[in-house]
Image (tube, rainbow, N blue to C red; front, side, top):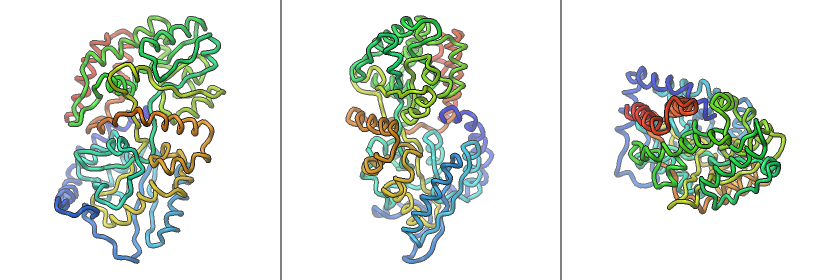
Amino acid sequence: MEGKFREHSRSQKLWWRAGAGLAVGALALAACSSDPEEPAGTSDTTGTETPAGEQVEIRFSWWGSDARHELTQQVIDLFEEKNPDITVTPDFTDWGGYWDKLATTVAGGDTPDVMTQEERYLTDYAHRGVVADLASLDIDTSKIDASVLTSGTIDGQLSGISTGINAYVIVADPQMFADAGVEMPDDTTWTWEDFKNIATEISEALGDGMYGIQDYGGNEAGFNIYARQHGQSLYADDGSLGYEDDVLAQWWQDQADLRASGAMPDAARSVEIAEGGPEQSLLGTNTGAMGFWWTNQLGAISEAAGRDLVLLRPPGESEFERTGLYYKPAMFYSIAKDTEHPEAAARFVDFLLNDEEAGALILSDRGLNANTDVRAAVADKLSPLEQQAAEFLAAIGPEIVDGPPAPPTGAADVPEITGRINEQVLFDTLTPADAAAQWRIEVESVINQ
């Protein structure tokens, strides 16, 4: 899904400009409704609490496949069975139309009571006063990792609560390591230099058309880990860029070194592979030993490969002053600031997050459950590869220092910028240092609008 952000960021930006006239009245009203003196536990929305026993209706919006729509309806049915005073109206579409539809409904003053958000868009909606502060509502977050809650906190407000978690890691093929006569690394201690040496050794041992690692320069999540290992971060708390250019240049230089050694495919092949997804990846076609992927992609890549693959920590986690890994929210639940039924909306979100029966239906559909108790309760219902991912995520928990700040407004444009500049590095039309300078210029131009 990462690549799909690119095609909708422009339409999202255009709506915020075109729809500003429609939205300003509703958003101004919402902004005025906040009362800093409200006691804890009351709503900061424009709605009023629903009298006990009164039947209310709320709308829940999400994106996804037909399978997700069917599954979510089962979850809604279960909620309505347990909460007969609340009717939940489903409002769904595929990823392709979701953001345009949500932007249009918000501009028209018809924001869904409960909506699904993604981290690159959440800040936009939070800054415009569209979403409520979930910390002021009756939603139990005690079983969700603090670093995960941080990822949905914007300007001190809990704007979204993660539905589930992923991590950006190395997926590796033990069979290819064995064929090359190379030992699997100790992922708790290997360095970036170890990683480069291992990838090169594998490609040299297996010969032409076989590689140690797939190009990973087109996904800024990998750089965020690298920057965090160096005590920096992709984004700072104030929404600005939080790293030094020489760190980004070195990240791209490492990949140039891997291509030069033959451990990584050439530029043309790398671009072709990147456009194909898991099925056309080096791992998926049994032509590469390692690749950077999200933990929730382990099953799809293993299925394409025709054999079970394993998860490894990225290199460098013990090399520097701190670790870089973090839990990425798969998506978020948010509540409209102007909902007429904040108590009902909060009860529904609390159910989605904390009800074990709901968790048994959802399983890993929205990431491995952010609630650690629910995740443990449904573990035996997960597939073996999903269980491997769950165990891996649990194992790295004590090593995670914190969560990165939420991406700033405009971050939805960053994947396109990263992919395009990475291609220029691949084809040697930009040096790593020049690419780092260009990336900063272009990213600052979209996040500072």
